[in-house]
Image 1 (spheres, helix red, strand yellow):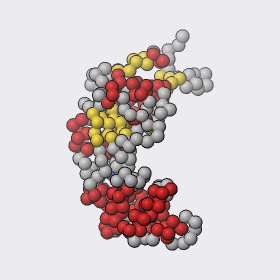
Image 2 (cartoon, rainbow, N blue to C red; image 1 turned 60 degrees about the horizontal axis):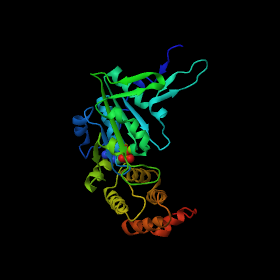
Image 3 (cartoon, helix red, strand yellow; image 1 turned 30 degrees about the horizontal axis):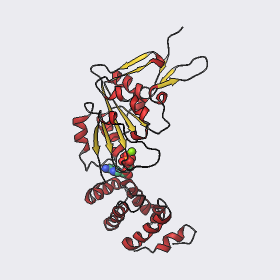
Image 4 (cartoon, protein in one colour; image 1 turned 180 degrees about the horizontal axis):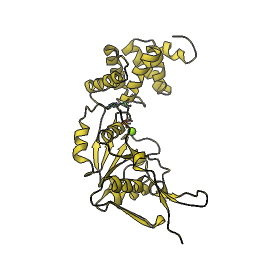
Amino acid sequence: MSAIQIERLSADDYAPRQGLVYVDTRDLHPLYDKLAFLSNIVLAGPKGIGKSLSVASFCAIKQYPIITFDCSEDVRRSHLIGMFVPRGPETPFVLGPLTSAYEIANETGQCVLLFEEINALTPQMQKVLNGSTDFRRTIEVPECKKVFRLDPKAKLWIVGTMNDAVYGGVYALNEDLKSRLRMLPLKYPKKTDEQKIIAEVLHKAEIPVDAQLLGKLLTLAQESRTGSIEYALSTRDLVQIVEDVHRVGLNRALWIATGKFEGSNQETILKRIASILGIGERLLADMGSGKSA
Ligand SMILES: Nc1ncnc2c1ncn2[C@@H]1O[C@H](COP(=O)(O)OP(=O)(O)O)[C@@H](O)[C@H]1O
Ligand SMILES: [Mg+2]
């Protein structure tokens, strides 16, 4: 029988994207400097607050190759470690993100492996990560007759992100995986920090920001985060709204933003917009039926 042919992408394919604008108001980068490759971490917090971006921009600055994997409940072992892929007369074993990370780390000296929404993995799939997140730093893959081991000098940093809000299709993190990881609980930024983040992101994009309007939008976002409305406007949403204000004007920007809310929540946000920004509820609501604003 011929030897199993193993394939993967090259280290260059995992080169971090450059030019990202990340505003580090939480001083996460100095923290990553201390923890990277020593402690595997999970960033837990609401969506759209820069969790993924903080890791991506850290890798860009450090020139660390980064493998990013979007987790879901459909992920099976073969999606993580790899599978045989028939191609013409050959059927190579194509490595998945986990096994690729070992190989890239051994080849280049280091690799960052980012699991987005790590808690979306089923409990069984979370267990597949155990050997990689503890002292073993090994994963046995009988499927391709190989044990992937981190070379003594090679460094692998496993990072996860997770939304702490409970929503459909997402499991909690296993106790045994949790015990192997450092958990960083993150919250929405303080108002002054959020203002700084948005101003800087838009400045880099050469989009002017009206400070007074931004203040009102921040108030609107904060009110949406109290738990009484199902959808909370994130920092990412605020960036989008300010971009839209620049491109299509305030009324349309807000009308688009209300699309993120459903049913009675939409009524509530329209009322909040009316009281904070002084734009009539019906005006925005009617835009969906084509009545001009
Ligand atoms: N600290 C920040 N610096 C720059 N952009 C930020 C920051 N926080 C949030 N954002 C906005 O959110 C987007 C990135 O959010 P992301 O990292 O994907 O969020 P998360 O992973 O927390 O869901 C950015 O494109 C930007 O619009
Ligand atoms: Mg993310």
